[in-house]
Image 1 (cartoon, one colour):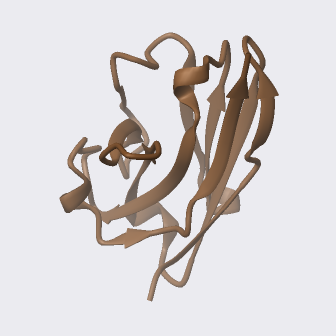
Image 2 (cartoon, helix red, strand yellow):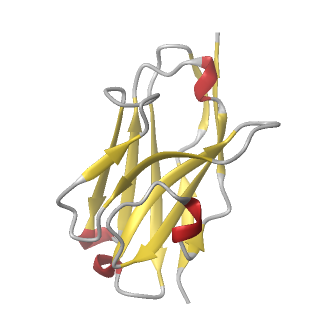
Image 3 (cartoon, rainbow, N blue to C red):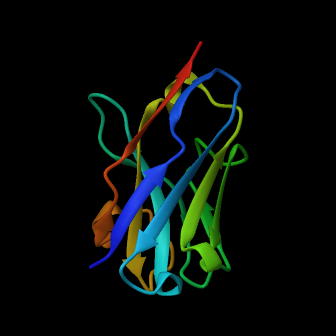
Length: 124
């Protein structure tokens, strides 16, 4: 059974940066595409970024493209989300998700495993 554990969230001022991390355990990390989704109060869960299991391509939502960067460290079974130039509208609970041999889909239904989520708040 795959387990995902997020860390690195918190409160930051508008324009600041945070780095989220997610550790995958239980199965070979290199076989999984990893993604970040987020959900703000009263809104549906939305795609943020994804990286293929091969690590050769990343995908981003238009709203974060150019500000966020997803990366994976296969040696540490960890995926990171570097978030720069944070805006109040980035405030949400951020979830890490994994899909076996995935190609980096933006559909939450494609992902079999999810973390518990971590709060990110960008305050003006």
